[in-house]
Amino acid sequence: MLLNTFLQSGVLLFTASSILFLFSKKQQGSFNTAFIVSFVTLISYFLMWQGGLEIASAAGQPIFWTRWLFYGASCSLLMVEIAKTRKIKGATLAEWIYLTVIVMFTGFLAARTLTSVKWIYFILSSVAYILLVLKVFKARTEETAWIENYIYFGWSVFPLVFLLAPTGFGVISSAIAAGIYLLLDLYTKIIFNVQLKK
Amino acid sequence: MLLNTFLQSGVLLFTASSILFLFSKKQQGSFNTAFIVSFVTLISYFLMWQGGLEIASAAGQPIFWTRWLFYGASCSLLMVEIAKTRKIKGATLAEWIYLTVIVMFTGFLAARTLTSVKWIYFILSSVAYILLVLKVFKARTEETAWIENYIYFGWSVFPLVFLLAPTGFGVISSAIAAGIYLLLDLYTKIIFNVQLKK
Amino acid sequence: MLLNTFLQSGVLLFTASSILFLFSKKQQGSFNTAFIVSFVTLISYFLMWQGGLEIASAAGQPIFWTRWLFYGASCSLLMVEIAKTRKIKGATLAEWIYLTVIVMFTGFLAARTLTSVKWIYFILSSVAYILLVLKVFKARTEETAWIENYIYFGWSVFPLVFLLAPTGFGVISSAIAAGIYLLLDLYTKIIFNVQLKK
Image (cartoon, rainbow over all chains, first blue to last red; front, side):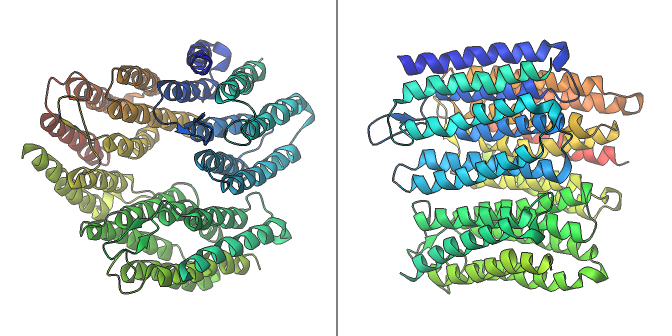
C-alpha cells in the first residue's frame, strides 16, 4: 500500500537523520535540536506506521491526528532554532513557542473532528499561525533572509495539504497527503537543519 | 437550553476579548499574554460548546472535565503576569507554574472521577492551591496590593463552585455552574488583564 | 493482594515524604523540588491504586502505563536538581529535560503496546536514556561524584524491571514489579533528596 510505504519511508529517513545529526560534529552544541527534532519525528512516523490510533473520515480515509501533536513538540524546537539565528529569546521566544503549540493543538482538534465544526478549529489554527508568521517576519534580519523562504514556503504548504486531504475537502487521498507531508518534513526538519549549520 | 447559552456566550465573549487584546496597543509587549489567555479560553469554551467529551454525573448532569486542562495552560500564563508585577522570575516562577498545573490537573482528575475517590483528588488539588496562594501572598508588594483581592476572591470561588456543582455535592446544576464559571472567567481573564495594563 | 499493598504503601510513603519535604527548613529554597517530586509521585501512586486505567497483558497481568507519564514530570525535576549541583543551566538543561521526557514518553508507548512492536519503543527509549546518561556523565564534577552512583544504579534498574515485568518478558509478576519500583522510587525520589540537601 502506498500509504504504508510513505509512513515506513518516514521511519527510515528520520532514523537515518537522527543518527546523522547525533554524530555530526557541527550539530553538537549545548542543545542538539536537530537530533531531537528528527528523533521526535521518527517516533511520530513509527506511531502512524504502527497504526491503530487513526480515525476514519466520512469517505473512509484514515486520518492520522497524532501527527499534529508531535509537530507541537518538534516545531517548537524549530522555533527555538530560528529564534537563535535572530538573537530572539526570553518572553518573545516563549510567545512564539506558545503560538506554535496552539497552532498544532487546534490543528489536532480540526483533524480529530469529522463534522463541519472542524472548520472553526481550522480557522483558530490559521489565526494563530498568521500571528506567528507575522511575529517571526518582524524579527527577520538581513543575515537570516534565506530562512524566510524556508519558513513561508515550507510551513504554509502544511495547511494547504490539510485543506486538500481528507482532513479538509478530501480532494486528495490520505496516501497522497502522507507523501506530501513526508516531503515537507524532509524539507523543514532535515534539509533546514543541514543548511542551518553550514 | 441555559447551559448552551452560557457556553456560547463564553465563545463569543472570549472571541471579542481575543480581538480586543490582540489590537490593543497597551497589551503589546514582548509576550501578549492577555491575548493568549483569551485565545486559549476561547478554544476551551468552543470545545465545551461543541460537546461530546463531557461525562454524566450519577444524577445525569454533564461534567465538562476539559475545562480544567485548559485552565492549566491559561492560569499558568496569569501566574507569569502576576509574577512580573512583583519582579518574580526564574526558579520561583517555575514553582508557581508547576503548582498551578498540579492544581488544575488534580482538579481534572477530581472532575473526571465519579466515585467518592474524587474527594481525595479535590483535597490534593486544594493542598497545592493553598501552597500556591501562600507563596503568591508572601511575594506581595505594596504597589500590587490591588491584585491581592483579584487573586483571593477571583480564584477561590472556583473550588467553591466545584463543590456546589455536580462535580461535588450537586447542589447546583451544571448550567448554573457554567454561568458562574463564565462570570469568574470574565473577571479573572478579561477584567483582570484590562485593569493590569492601565 | 500484594499488588494493592505496594501501591497503597506508595500512597502513604509519598504522602509522608511530601509533608516532610514541605516543612523541612533545608528544602525551602526558591523552588522546593523535593516536595513537588514527592507530591507528583503521590498522585501517580494514588491513580494506580484507584485503578481503572491499567491494561491487561497477554498473560492477564495488569500494566500500569500511567506510571511513565508521571515519571516524565517528576524525573524532569530531578534532572533540574542534578543540573543545579553541576552549575548546568540554560540550553544544556533544556536538552536534559527534553531527553528525560522522550525516555518516559516512549517508555509509556512501550508499556501501552501489547504486541512485539513494544520492543521498538523500548529501544527508542533506551537510546534516549543512554544519550541522557552520557550527557549527565560528561557534566560530572568531583564534588558531585556521589550522585553518580545514585543516577547509574538508581535509574538503570528501572528499564531492567521493565524488561522482567509483564511489560517485557513477563518473568516477574506485576505485583513484584510494583514492589521493586516502589523501592526504586523511595531511593531515587526520597533518599536522594534527603541526601542532596544535607
